[in-house]
Amino acid sequence: MIKFTIKNEFPVIVALSLILILVITVINWQPLRVALGLPFVLFFPGYTLIAALFPGASDLDGIERVALSFGLSIAVVPLIGLALNYTSWGIRLYPILVSLTAFILAMSGIGWYRRNKLPEGKRFKIRVEFDFKWSEQSRLDKVLTVLLLGAILFAAGTLYYVITTPKVGEKFTEFYILGPGGMAEGYPRELKVGEYGQVILGVVNHEYRRINYRAEIRMGGYLKHALYPITLDHEEKWEKPVYFKAELPHENLKVEFWLFREGEDREPYRKLHLWVDVVQDE
Image 1 (cartoon, one colour):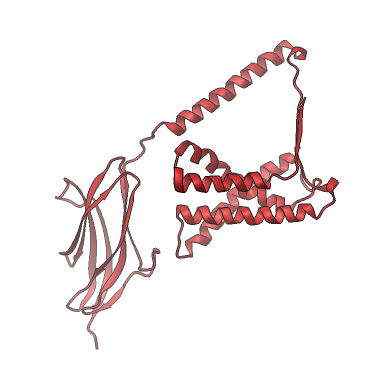
Image 2: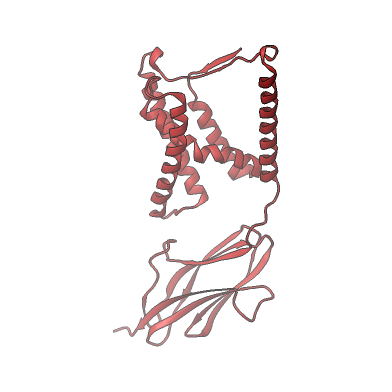
């Protein structure tokens, strides 16, 4: 019989979360990143929150804790992302990584504190018991056991193959403009004659190959400025503040941003635009 009890699982959760940060920022090994990232997003936030809310052994049973951990994780992570969307950091990898880690650390600390305030016998503990004697199993049980182990090995092998095999999805390039604050808001709508407007121009390569891009800024149909070469590898991102101005008053002046890929100079690959009123300085 295999039997053991885990009285404090929080150090393991915290350690795995910190290892994930190390893997993402330093090692960047995709299989380990996926293996640690899935419980980090789908289980740890909800589990630590449940531990903080229900520290007692009689509050919830094990199955309820596991089910609620997955459900609350699915609820907590989007809420954290929504909160980040209204900050200057935005919904990006490192802000989400830091925010989720901080949440897990905070809930783990609260859970540990509340659990230790209870008498020893009333604290929640993870108990694992496994009693299996092959010789005492019926023929049907042995067959089912072998099939189950085979299914587990097949699932593990399939997961490993999916993680380690490069996947070629849709090939495209992100092309976007942000306001001066780095958010999808605050775009210049009215400028004085000779006054510079500013936006942040961004390009993200999802083409599964290195590409040289050229970006152009046009006002009223005329080329004003070109940025090149913008050389990006697959999944590499480029962002840069760009400026534009008009020397004459104009109502609803169309400010266009064109993106070209190398070897495709006839038609722009992507187009964006803003409408800006240019007024005479009084």
